[in-house]
Image 1 (tube, one colour):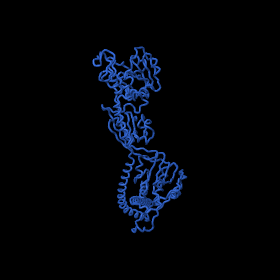
Image 2: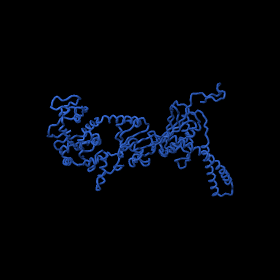
Image 3: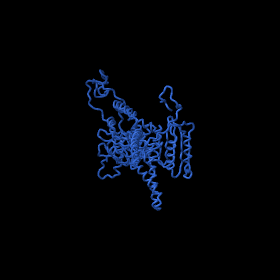
Image 4: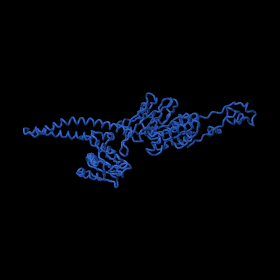
Length: 603
């Protein structure tokens, strides 16, 4: 801090408001002045009078009032991290009531300061901003700078109420405001301090950003209104307790999208402390690809800021494990007493489990409908199909056909056989599989399958990697059906790597399941197809029927297991078959003595 010498009358003793001491309650002897009135001699205590002076407390006249405080005009210079808190403090109603003699008289902002304001803006000017009244001849650049200044908490330009004039140099500032008492250089690098020292007249105090922040912290911590602070603290504690008990992510944002506050659920999910996240932009929480792009539904925050109304959308993202998560994002506007939007509340609710249940329910309903329809259609088509195939065979045996006609009949016969194969697949998919319960060694199953399917992998530049866990239990299930599922997964993985890659077959054990997984390094599956990939008759292949994965999932679930999908575009896909382990409980060959009906527990 730099203070120029100021010649003037000696300073009067500090008052209670200057020292920060809370004055005592007024005594009945002098209801207008303080507890020790110098003009009437009253001590301010009931029943006591001063010992000096000819007048008693009851008859003491008050011929003159205390002189008013000298105005203390202040100017701000530059842009930095101290700008928002200091400018906000000087405009706070409680500060203006407590220090009415302090006034923000002007601002020193250069072209470099405006560029820095623009660089640190989360959103470009114009998103839900009120256009400042700069007159009809104002340029778009001037309007944008005025918007950025308003976002930083700076007062408007005169003649707007509470306006403060702008200056582009220290000399212009002091020439227009000769009664300035203090200038605060709020730039982080102190770029204005040298010019201010050179141009400041006698009696002007100069303070850098560090000193300004120190003063701001002292004043901000001062209890200007102890009752209001107590109520505010209670309300804040209650609000923090409520939002911390909610399992959803809750963010409090300013109108630029910066995080003002957040609940504990976010900290548990993302890590760090509140100080690490406060001040960052909302899209930095889960990345700009989560909810900002138009192809993901658009930004709910932008919609709320633009329309002033609640917005709601469902967004998806792929986590680090390659699994799709569903989030329902809500944003709500928060307005002040004048109806102006000051904050936006954003809530992010993880609805992955609920969405999965809805998809499974829809899948079950679809499968039931497809089963009934396919059985009927297959039955009605196979009868005329047999007739077509029979007559085609008869025609082929006829000696009267020429070569051209024989070739056409051969095509008819081949296509009828292909159609019959498709109908058999549909019927197999529609009818219950009824897998036999037996013992399956997943390690042995993986070796046998890869010996069968691995032929020709060298020519396709596919490397096989078997990662078989030792000492895993056998699985409960039908070995032949499991082999059919594994062959289908290996075939899909091979087709996903047209340019070669690594195909990994892995076995393992979790507390509840024993599993076998097939992993490839192929093209991957887009996130929007993860829910469709197991749907019957859905295929990404040109000649695929879309039955294989749907049939595999049906078989595994009828065995009491689960199918899990992990995939990222450009990195590859992993499909895991989870099966129930074979328990160490003997299966009785004959009914137990206390179970004459033969319905004893079966392993």
